[in-house]
Image 1 (cartoon, rainbow, N blue to C red):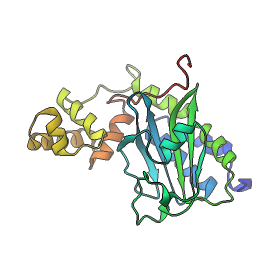
Image 2: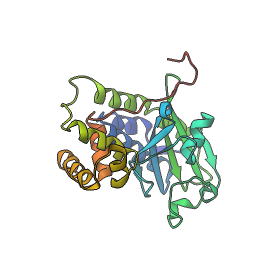
Image 3: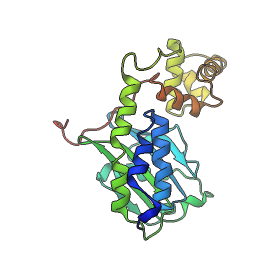
Image 4: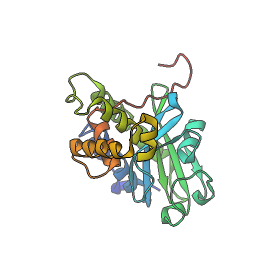
Length: 242
């Protein structure tokens, strides 16, 4: 698939880099990926190799369990991370560890997963669903990789002292929020922190109020955007890589 006059790399990248907060960066990456590929759906995951997991951080066109974490050996993201290069999956429905529901139309067809590199590290993976066989994977990789610096800078700003307001959470709310990021239920959070489910609900309600959000996924992503919770680390391709 040729971009031609329909897709301009320079204009797309200027928009991606126009607002260096994590969620806008990832959402714009996906929007322009859609324009480039004509795909039905896509998602971006952030890599946490130190803990052997990845976080679904943005999506469009499909419900791909946004805000949840998964082991690094799962799904199309896991394959791209393991192989350190773009991976083409001819039929996503045959992928045993995929996360789309069986009824989701994006589940049917070809999928391309593209790792995003920074200084020898895989920092994220973009997965594009239901793509045409005519798609130029090299072109998709070139655009996706061009957004790496925006992702790195958005995460750096979230971590930098003075770059974001002090986190508004109590120490216990911080603990609850961290467990919500892993997809824990109220009962699982309660068991982990040795508190009652009723107390967990109170902490969750406080977190939603302080993040001005209506659900847990939005609360997690808002907290990440503002640098209010621990950042995902990422992998090094070799022990001495920088």
